[in-house]
Length: 76
Image (cartoon, rainbow, N blue to C red; front, side):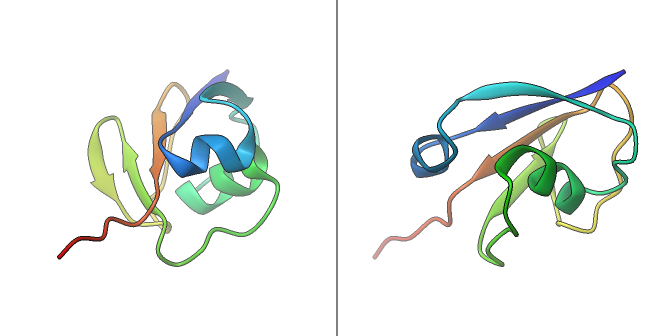
């Protein structure tokens, strides 16, 4: 059982890959997925989505979910 993880824009470059699968065992939240896939704590500004819906780092996940991470959006 696994979680599909996707990284976009500068996060893809920071972690070194666009997509990966991580074992779902022991993962409960989006933050857990980040730590398992990016190997460091998420910056509070990192944006996340679970199954294409905006999600907080505390959002619970389940086997088979797709979790996507995006860098903060800026503009003017």
